[in-house]
Length: 217
Image (cartoon, rainbow, N blue to C red; front, side):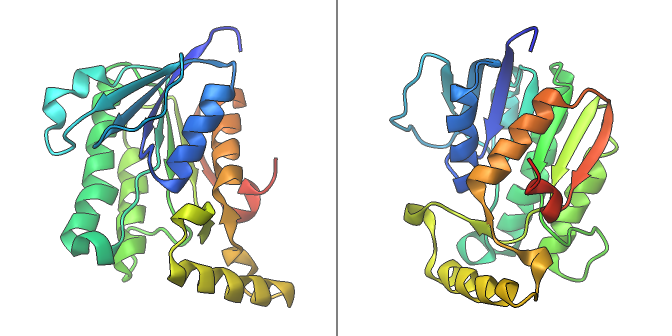
């Protein structure tokens, strides 16, 4: 890279977000890494800039969303936040943050979406993921990178018991050639692919990566 860049990471305390933070801090292409979090964390690094913010009051800190690449790795579950909460986090919050970042000069966004994302889907989760993809595509961006993983393999300390069962079942089915498009994806690989594409993709445009394409380094 000719000029060191500033990364902005939303969802920095989640499984994928933690990997994005670690890998961007280790990558010499980034001079600063900004994270926006709800609660303080202990991580310290010369390149790391931490902002503890109220995500319900974006207008009070939206001016801080300045950099080169915005990584969106927020995610929630119906069990944790309910239907409206999931819509607010997975769609509204990420969409509004994107608009503010673009207003501040951001020209590239990387989004963690999901396999099956479709704004017209009857499945609530797939529908809001698809709606976010659809709306981001209409924003004035030079580059939009959309990644559509299936089940994510999280670090051991973040794995839910239901997920561990799902990993086992999918691994078994994959071994006999079934459900390949839902192959579990380690978050470390997803983060690596997001960073690589956002740094090395020369063309402007919208780029969507299906699961099998994320595995390709």
